Length: 307
Image (cartoon, rainbow, N blue to C red; front, side, top):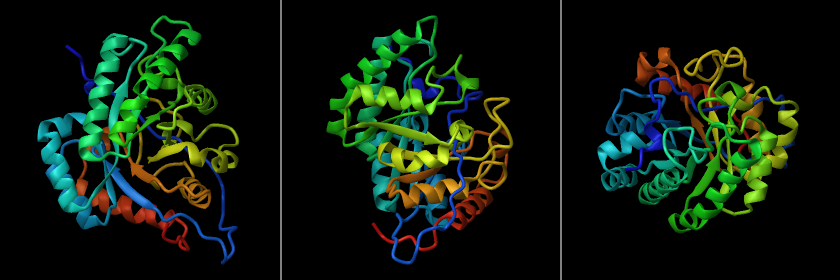
């Protein structure tokens, strides 16, 4: 029986974010930028049910929600879809699929089967992206790991097309290489996406994981069109645990510059706040989602126009 990748290591895991940049308002009055579409991941409000999250996110003014498969399964895919449609709350992403290298507790074929199930769920709830994590090296060579991911996502491309979703491949900081993925740099991930060469395979850009990449802000105009979702969280330093992220504005990542760079580059997808943090998980969720909404909105281009 397939072991759902979405439930692997939930109490100690942390999949996300990494941006960097320093772009000011260089645009003149003639330049239009993409409007900011803001969502919040269910992993930020770990203790809440989907019903609680939908009500609170609508009240706080969010445009969408990032879904986590165990919560959706508990509520029911069809029931979840109906409630989200009624609330007019978009689904920015569904997490997680992948683990194709066998390092997450199941085989390559089991990982393919579970990913197909994730894609099916994404089609039901209307998720724009399925977040994919490649898997650790698990004793393989780097070349073999890469081949497993390329073959898997090529095979799953037609499923994603049919479900009208994208497979968003996420690179992670090297700290997470032994547990989560061998894709530990932006360049390597982009090379894999290029090799896959399928229109429904894209990049999941996580600020927490990528913010210390060199010249990152300069590269955003080139990578924006390849990005399916931008995941936002803050940090004080490089990862020292799997659950040490901070809410936007509480760390050292220049999120405002990053958000504005994506807007200026025409990124029309969702910015998904996803914070894996023991402290956040014990906090007042209603306050944190209102605070995070206001903080991120203050970071965006004020002159953004409708797409």
